[in-house]
Amino acid sequence: MSPQKRPPSRKTVEKRKQVSTTAKQQPQQTRSQDTYELILETTGNLLDEVGLERLSTNLVCRRAGLTPPALYRYFPNKYAILRELGDRLMALQDEAVLSWIDEGGLETEDFDAAVASNVRLQERVNEITRQFPGNIFVLRALRAIPLLREVRIASRDMVAERMADAMVAAGHTASRERLLEAACLTTELTYSGMEMILEEPSRDGRQICVDLARMMVTYYSQLDS
Image (cartoon, rainbow, N blue to C red):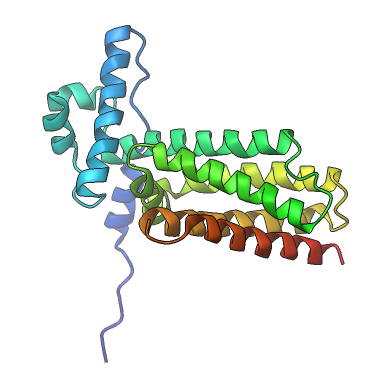
């Protein structure tokens, strides 16, 4: 029998709490802005090359031609860089979803139209993510690193709130609370589909989107029954 895993010590917990994941300062001058963006771009490119585990601030500095103090002026550690990348990726994804809602993406006449509309949204968000430097690794960081998890959760919850309000306005008869819970669930489902498509490009990404859309449209229609 394997020994029971011991809970983290108080010292370890306190150390985790002390790790900052926010940028130290926002650049104001053009040169500082260029350096800030160079750090983010270099990190994204390195993620594509070496992955999340091997990423380090020293590696970012070497690739970007910066000294460690130049990087630490803006970011205290690699988690702060990843958080900024995560914030930006979530903002781009959120903008696409909210635009889709505002464009009437939920206002469809029948099952097939609803599926087609949902597929368009998925493909739009997937393409935005595909074009983002470090795409799948940024997603993994937001899911796997506890310090960064709140970035993804905040994005999901905000989008779910807007989705629930839009579904109520579109005539769904389920309670808003039930629709909100459903929106959180289906958002997580689309994250999983996105990761499958990005991690396994040999798969039929279009078909995955269609299958997900059919599942979700069926699910929401049953909530109203």
